[in-house]
Image (cartoon, rainbow, N blue to C red; front, top):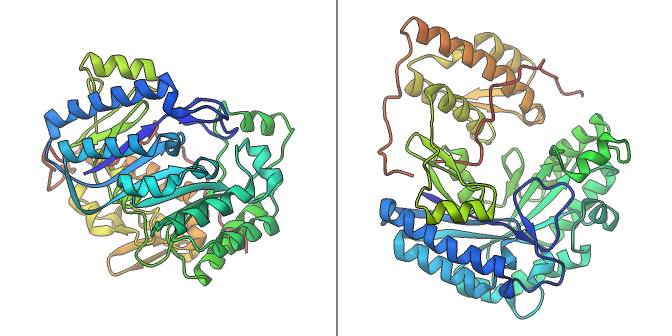
Length: 430
């Protein structure tokens, strides 16, 4: 089982962010904030609630996400981890990740205290090392803070440091992106996440782009950013193990790998999603509503029963994001059908265009395929839905061979929002 803890606090709201969070203010003391104190109290009650149902289950990884979890006092993070260990069984060498903004790690040996509290992996949200782009994104730190944070983390003895970066930003050139990667590599992180910017509806950044006040890089430049960026990272020893993630050997994020492998997990905190067995629910995206739900003991009442169709689509989406790809046999185990026969025309077209590889029973996206993965998945989803519904109508669809026990805890953050959108496949330009 995996545990995700959503900490919904930031010093300020970034202009591209659509996650649920509350701004405390640039100079606010999180330890003295009534909002933070109430959050911790309710979180302890939520942990106790789930301990009654899943107490003793082995926890392989814990991920503090947000928001900016590093705003929490290290002592509080330690208390939360102690409570998890009390209610559940922590696996030997369980991975414990804390997301952190660079400016939140300054002063008072905070990194050392987080490590003492039980954190063993830091994911530092740098995003960019260009001062102009940092201001455009609304980030509360400067480039020098990022360099300092990475240095402090390593000096404190953190043996697993990840950096989060973004490409495809308004006004960003290919040269700027590659320079950011080179500077990040000099910081010697163990893991680098390189995300292409997604304009989330309702965010300030999306409004600026829609209004023509900001302009995204041309599509060709974005393609070069992805392809050349991936090549540069691999040249320096970072394995491209998932569309947006690179790691030195042995430093892949085990928590996120659990999501992509379809493992189940428990989400705690406002807006967090859980999947238990074939049931999924999401906490209210409001601290007040979440608190009321916890106190009323009604967590998990609004449950979505995951259909076979949804589970198959999620398996395709998640497995094809990774470098290992989709084990074709898993499709047969889940549906009783032959993947290659169901999708023969699409597979042939993708293979002829160099977008997939098929070897040893696995179907993988090539790097060019990863670049247009959204289009590939949209077409794959449409065909899969047609096949499954036709098979179901004539009784040719069987349930999964193995059902996980109800107490087993899977994935939650990659929920399909509605039906697939069918788009023409856009082949990468050479």
